[in-house]
Length: 479
Figure 1 (cartoon, rainbow, N blue to C red):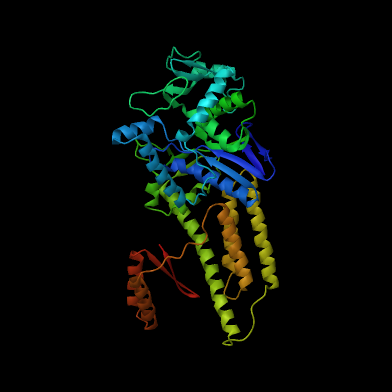
Figure 2: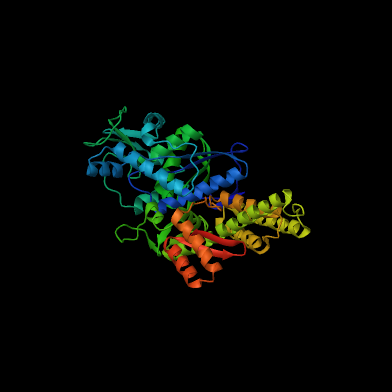
């Protein structure tokens, strides 16, 4: 398995620290609002990475944090007359609703920053003791130049950074590039006790501490959006390696940016969408499918046309799976009739043609795996699924053996499941009115009253029910 490592700027063979296990940390959200679709991309991408490792038999310890104390959280709390804790807890609940809709597997742990303060104080004290940090007027700073490898992830030179970036004058800092580990409280802010002041931690220290506590001093994969490479992940490396004296993470993975209609997403320009916004127009499975339609390191452009295309593409997969399920169910009923003596014959075994076709389907599964093994190329993996769908649509018929149909369906659902895509929708019950309309339409067709039949079809469409007249009879689905 090859992974593109941001640290080395090349694809590398994945070799875990411990055989059969993966320790993976993904930077989580700052919980002050609903997550937007830019936040959704790394959530979906690295959930898919985790799922593939599990598919390959790895035991994955997957940790993703909540930043539940932050300037934005505090501002929202003040604006609403709430506590910061009330704001963060509200949006953690909303986050969980959204990721459930995106079919994201629960993390092994979702630690909260406010519950890990003691560990942050301990790490900061250790950095001071080792000469990598210093205190001034209640604020603790990381001494950036004390870590010779600073810039190795982002490939930035510290002298160039200092010369090229406008940094506000701060007389307390020894060096303009030093960054905050602990800061004193301001009036009305939540705070915690520390040897230096009543205050709270800086942002960067959180992940270093939580990763160490729940995964150990060395981990396999650290991941997040491209925007986190500098300064957040760069600072995490400096803190962790200066404190622990060990390599922090073997592999660094970062997803590309998401644009809206080829422009950067921004509230000020009105092209800003939360996951909750999208859920009003689309099943969130469509959003997940859309995100996986491009390679994770490539930038991706979001617009309504592309979402419609993703909806239609996902519908093709789900329709193929539903047809196979229907054929299997029909074949099962026929077998029951045979056993009860209502028909003659026996259950069908695989024909030679079916055996060959299943070999082809197995090759498509290998093609899917090859795509995923090549730095998690989900775009090519999806293409392999569509080839499998085409095979099933062409050769899966009511004359096919149940064993053949079932193996095709199992393979489609398995590979879709690796991507977090539900090939089979949960059955949705029609209410009595719609059931009656479908029966009335069937009767109208028998009576050759095609005008009434068309009227009912249109009425059902208005209610969100799309009818399909197939060889196996009338089928329906949500439009």
